[in-house]
Image (tube, rainbow, N blue to C red):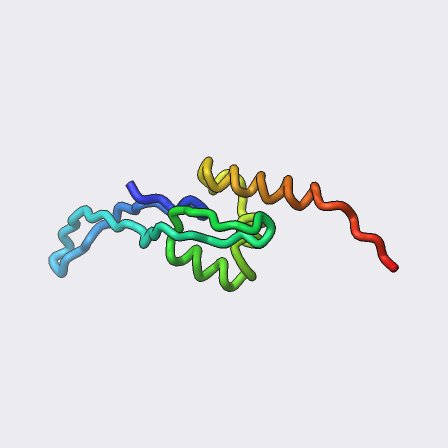
Length: 100
């Protein structure tokens, strides 16, 4: 079963309705791709199963890090949640820069 690890998008069941109004069950799968996404905070690539719609949303929001930090934890898979927690730890571990 294909599932996007960032948005939680899953296969959907729908009805194909003919001209005679006969309903036929059909299943549509999201367009999920295995992608290597670069995290600027971690300074490394992360491999995730991501829907193409999520890739477009990432580009619109300003990158992978910004997208995953704003994403709700209930929608993320266990692997994506682990990446998000690593990013949060990395951000909080950075020392505060002094203003001159």
